[in-house]
Length: 257
Image (cartoon, rainbow, N blue to C red; front, side):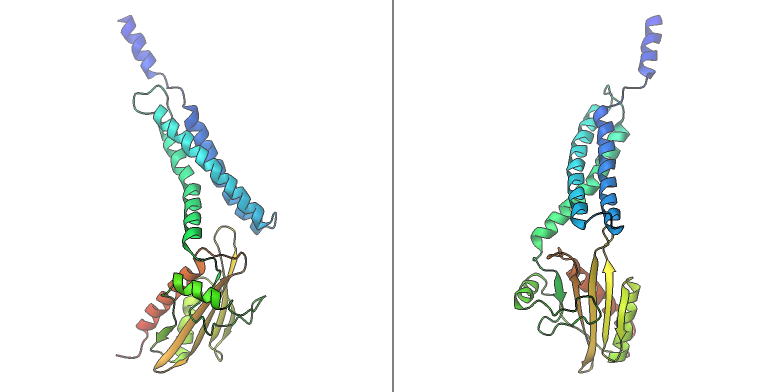
């Protein structure tokens, strides 16, 4: 009986914590914190964005190590195993996956999108920025060819509204998307705006051009990145989403039966 009580007492003792699970969780948290801090530091002017990106790269390597440690900790803490901390190991796995998923998305986008950062629905007569720091023309034929091959769906949008109505709707959609309106010139059918990325606050520039067309109005959009030579598809996605929202809103206000 004494032996049975001793065995029961031993079974109630807390299991020793799995060190791989603990270090995996801590390293995963440190990786996420480093990535967030790299963006905040750049926004506050503490360092150049390249240094911030380098810190994020090293944080991704740390997240990979955290994933391995957490996986080993998960094995150590399996049911009826000698080590405790299973919830910690699972949490470490999930946290480590966050920066790794970001890095994977970044790499896939880099390999599957063209090396350009200026996109326009009209590549032959692209809208021209007038109220931005560097009001340059669309890059030219080489960029246009790369764009058409990668994003053949990005074309001018024809709306069954008057140019004035189309302009009002275009401005309303831009504001609804949270863009910072830099210029709004109804007489020219021109809207210029900026928008920033979530983490680093990189600024992209957008111009919307509305002009009269037979039976309605024609809308063109151009979006470009201020920094870097590639955009990993960000500008194309922005234009695509904007035109879809504008078309939906215009359809609801189309005077035609």
